[in-house]
Each structure stands twice: as structure tokens, then as C-alpha cells.
Image (cartoon, rainbow, N blue to C red):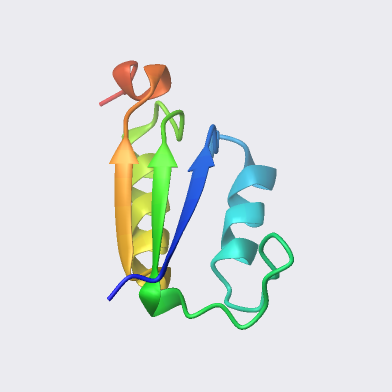
Length: 85
């Protein structure tokens, strides 16, 4: 049963600093928008495009998010249209 929805966009995980930020957000020790004690299993994250044009980075990002949040939804952006094989 989902009780919260987070929305993120333009993660640009091609950059190591952005991947590190995302790791921190998913660490369950992070404070997200001032909220503490987030029940990640009851939280959905909606990722609104521009994660990466690299399929391996895109896969890494969603694997991390799936391990951390109860539900993950994704809307592709223009960067995903440029995916490298």
C-alpha cells in the first residue's frame, strides 16, 4: 500500500556526482525534503525522464531504485531516446 509519492526528474546519472547523490537518497539514511523516517516500502518514486543515454547506467539506476522503493514508475525523456547499445 503506497502512502507517499516522490517525483524526480533530470537525474543525469551519466555524472558520477549525480549517481552518488542518488545512492545517498536511496540509503535510507537520507533526509528527503525535511522528511525523516520515510517508509521506503510504502513510497513510490516517479522518475520523469533524462536519466541517461547509456543503457548500462539506466539499468543501474533502476536496479538501485527498485531495491529502495516500494514502487518505481518511469516516463522517458529525450536522453532515453538517444540510448547507446
